[in-house]
Image (cartoon, rainbow, N blue to C red):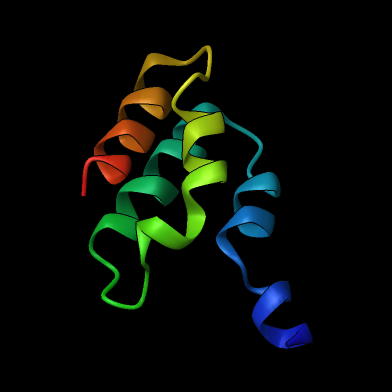
Length: 65
């Protein structure tokens, strides 16, 4: 459990410093076959309201999957 938590998208995105990094990370999750958006709705809903439009849109795109 510890390893899975350490590599969770929630923790990974918190390490990102710029909105562009967050946007790129969210977009990379869209093509990751191991990523299930339904298991991360809380995180995606949070970022869908981000002040940066690109971050918000990338999160909304994942929520729509």
